[in-house]
Image (cartoon, rainbow, N blue to C red; front, side, top):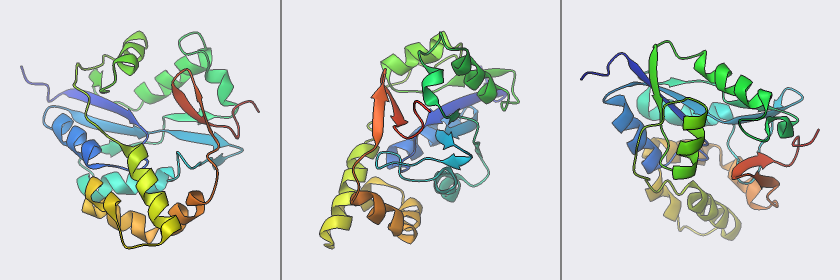
Length: 206
């Protein structure tokens, strides 16, 4: 059965975009119109970034488009507005359903699925009626890539182990914006995890 009139929703961090992300998107594109929603955290009209969430939405959008151009849609609607605590607990919070509807509104196709390789996330997507695909987990390892980036920035050596883990075009974007890596490499991580979800501490409660 053809699914050319169906959409695939990919809610994702992309900090940074990895080879695994590229593989996931490429696979989805074979059967679906792909909508990618990099998560954003906004306080007082400004995006909040942390050591775990270093790259701005615009840079992450640029990373995706450097590989896929306009063959996929990259949209800013997966956005949490401070205080982020109002989205908790998931499913019970009306704000979390508003976020869900905010995302769905951008999808033109009547039929849609969503993607995650994580079993717990799949249950959550199912509860939000986002029709998750059954998919094996690909090792995205963005956190280990960030660790390599920060180590490279601090130690200042020529060992660029991280480059092989991201698409070449993404590596070039990271290099052009190395000041971001350099900045966060020397900072403590001000990210907190609540019910398995990452949030910046700044803006969580107010």
